[in-house]
Structures are given as C-alpha cells and as structure tokens.
Image (cartoon, rainbow, N blue to C red; front, side):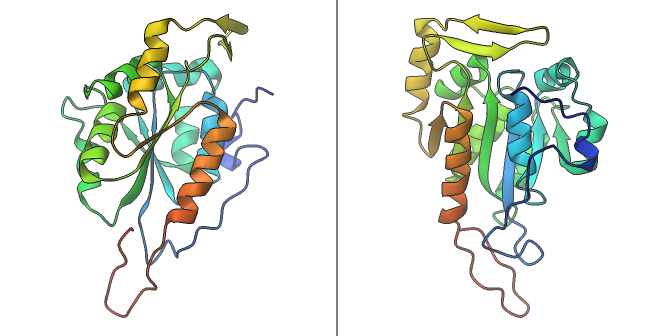
Length: 218
C-alpha cells in the first residue's frame, strides 16, 4: 500500500533498524544509496533505506530533488534522519568518497529510472547516481540497481493516481544490458531489493577491530 513519509523525522512507518554484522563506531563502511527521479517504488525504497540507519547515506540526483515533494517527501525531514548528499556540482564531487575504502562497501541505486538504467548500461555518468554507479564498478564495489521498467506492464503510483505503463523494447533491452555490467546486481521488485540488501549484509565480513587500527570493508 502507498504510504507517505510525512513523519520521516520520527522514522518511517512499519520499518525497523537492522542489526549489521559489525560495529558502526569501529567500522564506518556503509551503504551509499542513490535516488533518481523515479516515483515508482520511491516511498518504499526510502523506507528500506531507513531500516539500514545509521549504516546508510543518501545521494540525490537533481531529478530526485524535484520528484520528492511530488510524493509528499520533505527534504528537510530526510536530512533529519539521513546524511544527504545532493547533485550540486558538474563533476559529482561526492563520488570522491568512494575512494576511501573504509567509507562505503555497497552502492545502491533505488529506484532507478529508465534513463538512469540506460546511462549505466552504456557507461554514461553525468549525474550523481550514474557517477556513483560507474566509479563503484571501477573500484570493484558491488552495486545493486532497482530498475523500474522491467516488465511488459508496470503499474505504478503517479503523484495523482495509479497508472499502467508499458515499457518499450528499448527499456527492456537496456535492463538486460545492465545485467552484464561488472559488479552490478539488477533487481526488478521491492521484494528483490530487500533480498539483495539482506544477501549483501550476509556477505559482509568485517574483521574484529584491533587496538590502534581501523577496520576496512570486505
């Protein structure tokens, strides 16, 4: 059921914080969660991200910043819960944080528009999410992409009402192409996104912290 995140400052409804297999204070590596301009699964994707707090940061494209208020999501409230990075530079400056291997172990793009999927599939990186995805791949950091246009018929919630969309062959072909990209796991539903996050958490194996040392991500 569609739910508004009006009370995000106090925590989204029906979510819980996950217990990750490492101590956030001694091992700061976390999820980098990029949000694009898609409304499909937007509310639910942010709710899933919130279950990872405080082990997740948000990276918003300019399109995402435009779409959030259309779905009654207030950026100020997001900032009260998440550390938020915005697409305010031509060179996607926040991407540089991926070069610190102790900072992020996984990049998630959810939800991902068909435009973002096409760019990622063809190696184009001209937005914050597509730059995050590209640089993560070059660094061998696993990426999870929740692609929106993956079925012949997609029923989605617009700002006004539910609508039925029929992705073209080119959108479906781009999803197939994206599946071939190194270090990329494409998911096609919210259930698959949750499963991919759970699997990634299970894969993370952080060494126990030692005196005067800092843990790094696996």
